[in-house]
Length: 110
Length: 115
Image (cartoon, rainbow over all chains, first blue to last red):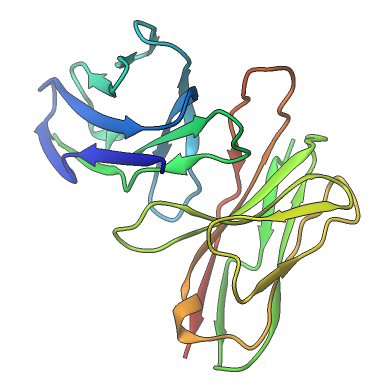
């Protein structure tokens, strides 16, 4: 059965304090690993898709990496506007949907 | 370009009442999905559709029904609402072109309370 575990559940950072969020996954044949950002009262907003181990993608202060068992979302010099819940999801071979983790709630303090 | 639009934003139902959550997208996406999100839980798939006239059950379909008569619209029907259906409901769509996945585009959700 597909499984996604995100850690930590919550993370408080000072502005400028870099850190990483973890997404560990178990899936039958990974078709894609997705990172989303969700602000309070809003739907998830797409950030990245990673398809194979060793792949990396960057967007502003965010960088996502992928291994065969986990993905990391690295946040470099975060700003208060980076505060949000970050969701990880996987899609396995033959699946028509994404399987989501429970998210990491990030708070960046000025 | 509106993307995925969900109505209503909020609703309070009494136990046993019925309602339809509306979802429409203007991106001509073939795939549409309904998820529910509960505190401390990941998004759970209720139903999905790969095109007009085709729907299939997801992980948690009990108590819900869907239809897909057009590419744009994918309404979710709750019959005989129960407190366990108190949740935030998200509709999403995806073009799903080619062999690689395309990301899901989400609406802003409907917050439903059943009392």
